Length: 578
Image (cartoon, rainbow, N blue to C red; front, side, top):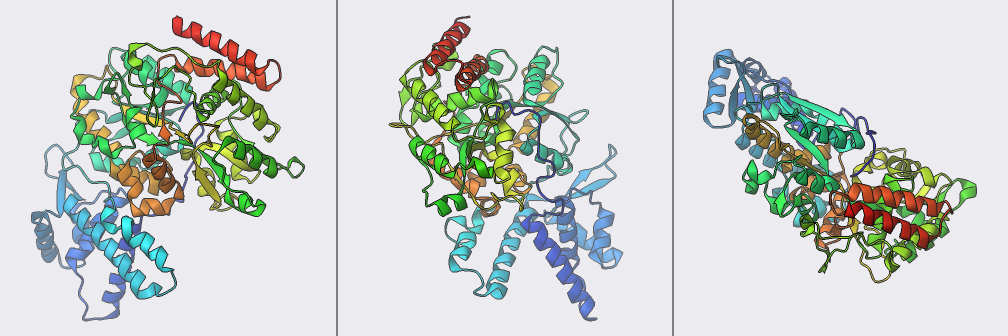
């Protein structure tokens, strides 16, 4: 995502919302209470009781001690102590020293215990479905959850606990963007602290301040942060100016399982053939459209720019406060992004990139051998398309940007909008929104002769180039945890609508969370996720600003489309030459 200011969604889901495993654990605990209280002959099962107490503490980020486990067993102290020892020896429980003397321990579920309970919870859910749901659910619904490609074997286990805490004096220090996904991470801070065994100090800035602080940090003798979040278009600038460290300098990149990342998101983290960050958010810009309004009007979902304009015209009703389309048209950065992406919709990148199968090649950019390509026929078609789209837009469209286009869509005043997936919680998690449960997701409709694409945005997390050597090992381990499949699934379960990994998109619980994940996964496999619309050259921010200024004058009627293209081309050429 780019340049969206410091807004965020507070508490994107209810604090009472729990994962499926936590729900089943709570159910088993209540069932055990009923069985034991309902019969004098029923005796507590200390292994079961301690396992449930340990797992509940893990998911709720509570410290669990040997004393609390013994208390949860509901059997005499000596018996509970023996059973606890058996569980430790069986590799089900890991002990982490709480003090330097090593005499005090916190207790954590091992990977073995987490794996066993993940499988058990899946079986319990299926048993309950088979026994009690009867024919209440259609067979295809059961197949979707429990059969075919969405089998329980694909379910990602919970976030594991490191047996040894990270050695990072003062805690792991993280600089991020103040968007919904990173705020979900902040809400889960205690759980991540428990996983890595040390404090996490997270600072969140608006997009402009984030870039400024990252650059200021690079000028310091030693980095104040162990990990920083980087917007995809900044990769070239940050790599070239030594803001980020190439990952291969710090770690074995194979540990990240690169093949699991959406191809476009992983490629976008590279500059000059080297990876400078790990995808933390892959959030393509999609077309959000109201399925119910389209059905009522007898319209098909638009896959071409012509069909999009026709649908916008049909659904545009200003007298009733309803408008056909909302988009980024505010002067400068917001409109600049729209210009680049609209040019891409007509098959034209903003640079003279070599054409390859499925898009355009960007691997040569580090050589500096590129020039802007704005003033051409594809650019003219894009400009004329935006002028036509203006007719079916809200009256305040020329001051509308990232969040401003989503809010009226969520409120039911807009029939269609472009939007990054990370903004979907504004309507997906608001049951009062007319768009809740009625939104369809498509790549950008394509102009004549072009292919539909979903321009990729998002953030990678990287290691500052000036991080002291003694802190690099802990930064690497924390980076692996924060971007792991287990962490990404946890973000989704707590309201995020971004995901950089194939494995997470295939998880049945993630699929149930939102249709957006299946839609994006399909776009990735069809090669529709593309990052070339915003090539990550050091000058890209300036080019975006230029386009956002010259095209804004065009939309206001001050200059013609051809004059806007000519001026943008001249200014971009001068920027590259300098």
